[in-house]
Length: 96
Image (cartoon, rainbow, N blue to C red; front, top):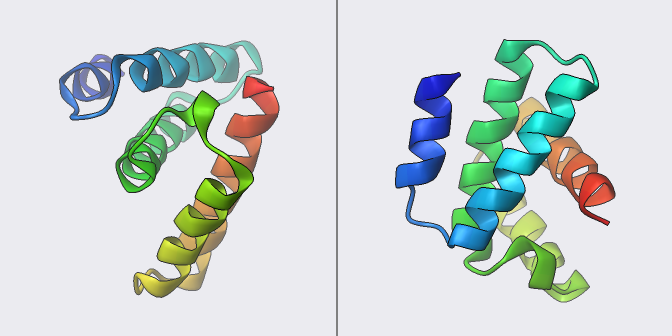
C-alpha cells in the first residue's frame, strides 16, 4: 500500500486531487475493503485524474461525461470500462 501512496504523491496531478484520493482510500479501509481492492481504486483514480485534468471537486457533469466518453473510446475491455465507471461513481458518492 505504501508504494501506491508513493505513486499518488509523485503523480502529475493536483495536490487537491492527491488529498481527495488519499481521503477516499482511507474511507475504503473504514468500509472494510481489502488492500488489493483499495490499490485497484487508487490506480484507477490516478488514471481518471489524469484524464479529467482538473480537480475532482470542481468538475462539472459535462467534465465527467467527457471522461466517461474517453474511457469508452479508449479500447479498454468491457470489464475495465465497467470498473472505471463503478469506481468513479463510488468516489463521487463519497466526495459529495
